[in-house]
Length: 216
Image (cartoon, rainbow, N blue to C red; front, side, top):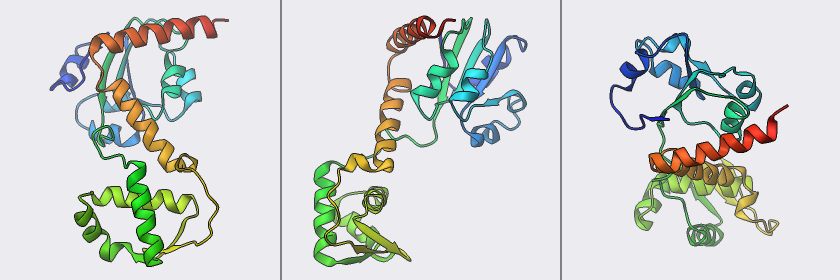
């Protein structure tokens, strides 16, 4: 395992690897665009889902992970039952969810009570003012608004929120946006912010388990 997370000039190190051995992998199309001019963009394989991951041949190759996957399930399908000779971890990430504010349930409770009291709220006009008043970011307000919309607690028209009174009681985790944020934070904590030793132990265990589970 070669830990190049946060390292500058990692492209130079990867370009020094045997081209016949290296398999450069990313999980987002925009990553390919960002590598334009490095000499690596043309050989990048973009993995968009578990099926793509499972089909990719990594036997006895140097797997280079440029960015982070959308889920650990996709990562599992990449490495399960395969004998990788080396793993290079770059794990570039444009949006850092781990260090962004994840609203507590108290945030949601206060915001919902605020909306109930008003009945409607012009988010584009007053969202920034509300964020400053509460010491929140505008992204936090937008995130909670999207969760409420998915749960059917509010409707949105031209940016104006209207409360749906007598809406069915639902948990925050019923919102896909809420669950996705949780998954991304957990993913970043595991892949980006863990130590090299912790990550190596986790990967070794993951590959060993997968090899046993998927061996034909």
